[in-house]
Amino acid sequence: MTSAANDPNADSPPRLNDSPDWLYLLREFDALYRHGSDGGSAPIRSHRKRVRDALSACFAANPEMTPRAPHLKPVTAHLPRALDLGERAAMQGMARALREVRGALTWEYGYAQISKSLARKYAYCEILGPQGPVPSDRLILGFVLFAPDTTYPQHSHMDIEESYISIAGAWSENNAAVYAPGSLIFNRSGDEHRITTGDRDPCLLAYAWTGPADRLRAPGMKLTAPRRAKPAG
Image (cartoon, rainbow, N blue to C red; front, side, top):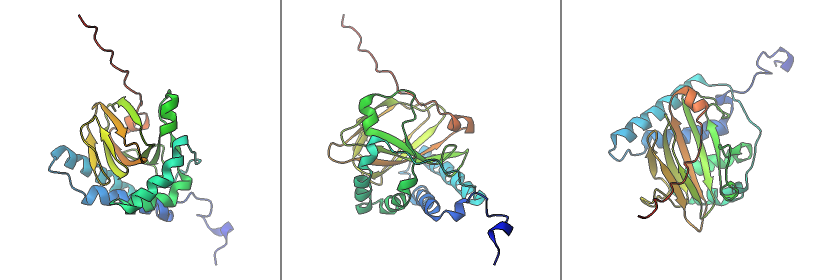
């Protein structure tokens, strides 16, 4: 038997393959972007491939884990309900995998300033990316959680393509449709979007960002200032 003192890997940080809960969670992302439908959309098809390729590169690299201190926000009181809903619907695999790491998640806002009302109803956690426990400079994967009856104000992401996949709850983007678990919504770089959620249950979304490494490291998140109505006359 090799003692810890003689083991050259004894003090090394664990790698992804040594962290099965995180590995299985990323495999759920891989399955969604590999086997889900693009709905016949060429831009969505291209985005899905970029996500798959970056995730495959991460699996091949087997990076050292970079854990952060767990942190909660007020909205995480709704996470158990969101996971319960997710485990009953089409995204049960993802919801179950997320439940296994829920105690190690770092929930945050991402904005320098945020209203008190939104601070009670919103937070996100990065799973893979420059700030995630699984490091990557090509891709960000994570989750965003909303309380019932939330309005997430208008915003956009420059030089970043974004997709959401519904895990639990009902929500709308730009008042265009109501999305149920399993739906994928794609926002190109610079696309303005606003999210509203149903008034009965929380909403949990998985998200993926692709873009230049420097932009992923510092996305410069900010909410769009409300447009003032033009005076009559």
